[in-house]
Amino acid sequence: MAWLWHRVDPAVALERLQDAPLWAFVLPVLLLLGNALLQAWRIRLLLQAGGVNVGWARVASVVLQALFVSQILPRGSADLLRVAWLGKETGQPSAVLAALMTARFFELLTWMSLLFYGLAWGVGTLLPWVGASAAVFAAGFAALTGGALLAARFGDRVVARLPGAPLRRQAASFAQALRKMGGDRRRLALAALLTLPLSAGNVLAAWVVLEGHDLSLSAAQAFAIIPSMDTLIMLPITVSGVGLREGVFVYAMGRMGVDEPTAVAMALNRWSGELGRAAVGGVFFLLGARLRAHRGPSPRPPG
Image (cartoon, rainbow, N blue to C red; front, side, top):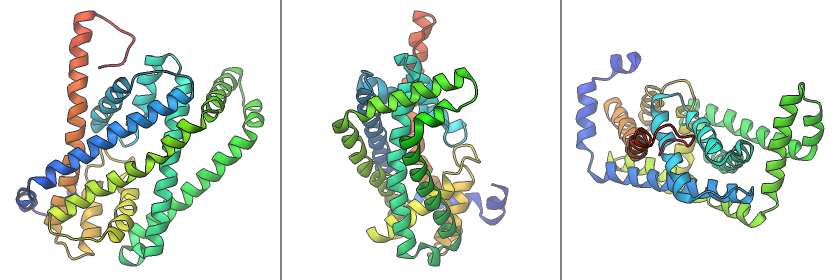
């Protein structure tokens, strides 16, 4: 942040942010909120495939609340909160962990495909640092995919060799939950297919922001550049990506002819979409706190 404010006058960046049209703020919130509800549907499908019956509204509440609380935590914390809260809600943490990890696995496959597309499109030529990060992440996702396939094939042998009986029991419970979920191929396939609109929604939310600040990209450009930029923005090294997001936008948008204050405004505009979605989760979180205050301690997660 110090580097950014040394290069960019905050007053000018905020002025550029205020110049954006209203739809550039409203549409990203709606798209990202829709993504959160779609994510809840996917998680519920996978939980049902694993034999855990929990209402969609309940899962959606937990998903949104995790997004709210994670705004003050490093990237990736939302998933940990979902596992903790849904695990306590259902009493089956292994099944919840299996469902959430499967959901993320499907997302990594889609993201990996977009990264390879971006590299083939030439993102590394236009944005060398972003291209390098995309290449590293694409290779890492490919390795994770291979590792997951090997684990599915030799998982029982790996579990048997783990040190300590408690760890072996937990690993065996997780493996059993995965096998049970894999038996419901219809729900598994639907959860995988729903990853496509989920990924598209993330790209479209950022695309709307760029258009709102007068940077027009084709669909081919948007789906090549934005997922590659996200490999840097999503690194879990700052709280809610603050500073990192703005730095990536200054670098990437600068290569496309955007001045630095406008690039920072774009980054803040995109973050406002995330904050708007998280605010909906904040409503559920605060309502849950009031309910707990009236009812006393409860083993259920907030909401």
